[in-house]
Length: 354
Image 1: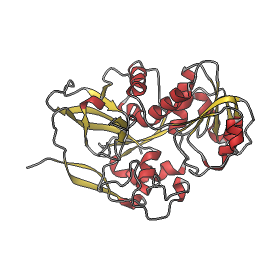
Image 2: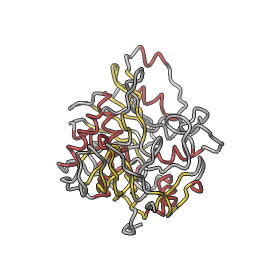
Image 3: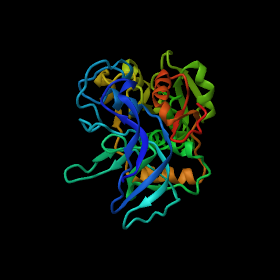
Image 4: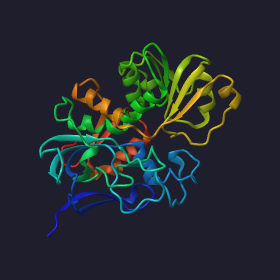
């Protein structure tokens, strides 16, 4: 008789009612080169919400919170196969290994949400954990051994490790693509969210001077993570000030973000929760030699640097709350409210504080 596990199925695009708690999901069988990971913790991300509501469809032109239409192909790579186990933020313990695997049972592991899958004609190809393949919103998760990293030595907790892959991986990739270096002035939107706070912390580690865009009530939190200054998200932005803009918000303020850059500046984007459709004056881009970076694909060395920082205890994600996995709908509703800074984390066993 095959083993079963508890977990959450995404049964289709829609609201939280599309999430179905199950206790009869088959435990994945381990093949050559694969690892069965017992999930210790799994972070909640905008990606989970975007995928659930189908926001990645080109038919959707609104902010994530305003999607109210039926969507067919709403995943990163188009149409998803349902039911799907979401969850791109994984921290877990190696349970079983397949042939040819260099991990041992008992090791603590994590992996990026973006899993590189280059192919002829598509050198930047990837699939996403929790989108094209099943993810961490269950008791067990099957992962290719080559995608896993050992974090047994890290002083961080399981919940902290699970708060890193998506937020810090996205942030480190944004900073890498924009070429952030010591002494530069960097503006970060959505600075109190998971990716925003990660970008603040990582940019400060690089020696940059960081300004975060956030609400007045969260300014202190953003500064505690390494920002030298904050700008209220309702306030006008200064012009010709920043070397780099890191943006995960998009929406109506996009043109002002471009104007906030110095000539020769770099704008890097990896999200658009305020809306994907933006307008700007192209003359303010090409006459001022502004470089735009769209950032999703992450080379392995980007996540490798994060693993080094994790194992050295040099990064510390802010976790506002943890929840039992079966409370995923509640966690996602609170996540969407944007009242809690940093990360929310789901725990498969009943040891959460939410």
